[in-house]
Image 1 (cartoon, rainbow, N blue to C red):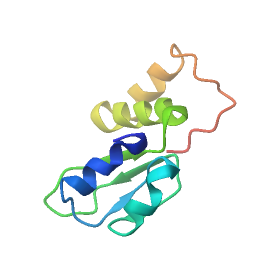
Image 2 (cartoon, rainbow, N blue to C red):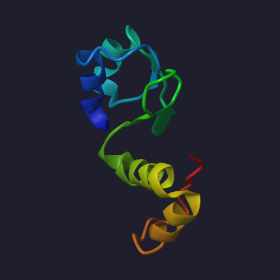
Image 3 (cartoon, one colour):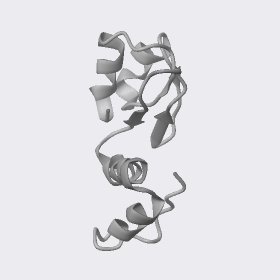
Length: 95
């Protein structure tokens, strides 16, 4: 979920876990979730449930996408696609 899309986690009744979102919906989510201000937040904290990946907004779309590739195909593949995507090497990607 990215940007205000994280509101879908609340609507779906997902259990309390770490999330992030666009700041305009932060107040709504802090009541239900463990809100973090990181660019990308991965939660696999809820036993028996899938991994939830959330991101703050359009400016974090590339790190969000790289994290999804990493989770699905591995860190090596994520690094491989990063170069051709022209993601600036000066931008830290510690996820």
